[in-house]
Length: 403
Ligand code: ADP
Ligand code: ASP
Ligand code: MG
Image (cartoon, rainbow, N blue to C red):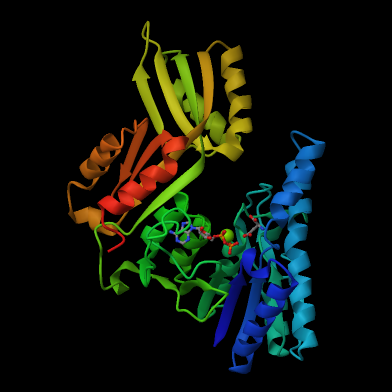
């Protein structure tokens, strides 16, 4: 078999753990498999590098951030290759560029355009274990790019797809996908399997156990994805097609995203095309918009509220300053103390009353809901951040996810 194994930050958090990973990888190799390992930076390393840059500048160039942040993964890749070679298992580490991962040039959140896996394939043919530095690629013009926070998951899935691997295993610090973040609700239950679509919603709505774009790609390329722990042999969670799943619970999980900010526009000039102007300009500046609400305000002017990831807030502010200056908008305010709590389940497609129950739980906890959005398989609510954990536990309990 050809297996891609990805080890996250905690799994390679210190030298002892890197040795532990080397032992695990060597076992898979001894069993007769070909392996490509994808590694993250040691835990805390990427945040440390971000802090270094922010100490020196409020607004460091994104291309320099990529140069900086991509270094964390290279350290781990080289150390793991050294450890494996020392154990008598020939190994070679590769940067994203060497592994042939070509991206667009949107620094700090680049998209993979194509993978040229020749170097990886040649090394595998020579019997080597390939260790790839995750989270990074190279743009057509030769610059280092990174794939967005948590992006080593995406590296692993994309490589598994390009090499047509039999399996892609994501090793992390929890034993699989749980009904909610087990750090928030210790009663959370591990799922044996979950559909790509539900996992994609959970990941997009804040469950950082898998980066959302990695799940999207796994679905598209039909990659067999398993999430499991690097600290024991416990079986993990299989992420697969909906039709392969036996039990379809009404609600599969609750996700929490604290990384959200609300932008409130008061007195938006009432003219055709204003919404298009605002949101096109935001999109051109790579600001991701999530929920949008528009109300009629005073004097025929409208009020518009929308949410963005906290990381995009500075860019959003710059865009809004332009509309303020041109008097297209009277006032803008920003609120970072919000969060989004979401309920996900394919069973919602065929059942009513799931949303009503969520709203009544929030009411009984005296939590005010600021914004709501729904799709076929999810309900999301924006609430004050101070109620984040409380609401997750209340909803988990109400839908009996601990049973
Ligand atoms: P890694 O460094 O291995 O990539 P991450 O920290 O990115 O690991 O993701 C693992 C973490 O995701 C867990 O420690 C857990 O707190 C969190 N998490 C959030 N939601 C879930 C969930 N539904 N199931 C499992 N873990 C979750
Ligand atoms: N080291 C990067 C991050 O912390 C990528 C990853 O771990 O997947 O976001
Ligand atoms: Mg991660």
